[in-house]
Length: 353
Image (tube, rainbow, N blue to C red):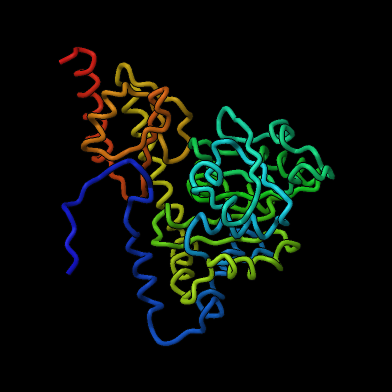
């Protein structure tokens, strides 16, 4: 029997949380008999139906192991070797994937500084130039993150403006949806309203951060991009042989309302956390709290002391900004205990005791 240390709670990442019991049960439910391997199984066929209900009749889903794999497969499927991806400077594909899009897929990332992790047509134009110039990697894809790395969201109208502009320039739009459920709950919108309906071409559909074990998917919305994805997924080692176990997780999450329930909990906990921290003198909430992340500025000494008990990341060492992530299993008591700890440490810091 595997022995674990006593349970502890943290705010470092929604990836720290365990697997939702309904998803674990779904894995067990399909663990019977034999099924055709590599995605030609009955369960994966059901996943296609589920995804089409969310994204439209033309949507096609391709299960992969993880979010980095989903992003690499999606972007490589759209780009030729001499083409490039425009993204925010803070984008996960540039800042947090170990160089995988560039190292593995061989793609040039053209980054743009953004004030709130969101791109606009004007910001895209800072890198959308040099078309036809042999000395410059050719811009081919605009990649946006929904919700963003700073916990902000794009409205459907803002995404529509991006896709219209990108398409006019002959580019495609990729949406990194690692926290797509949190964004949908925050916006009160369906997935289609800010993807299919506004011209997004291809999506990385996230499940792991919202209660799955290891389940993401590339969802192709533009049929013109469909042909390459199966081959790129195999070449880039993201084709699970026992696909039914990936598909079962995503079905459990998206067939009913589990995705909405989980994201609603984590979003609500973040709001509770922000409210509690705002009431503490000397604590500054540095980003809008729209999904399940809270960004706050704390004195470095306070952060160091808190991190001994509560794991969380320092986002910007220069400003003291920290990132606090809530998960589907974060409880109100988790929030209240952490807020009390912050209050105590801030009081200690101010008095110098």
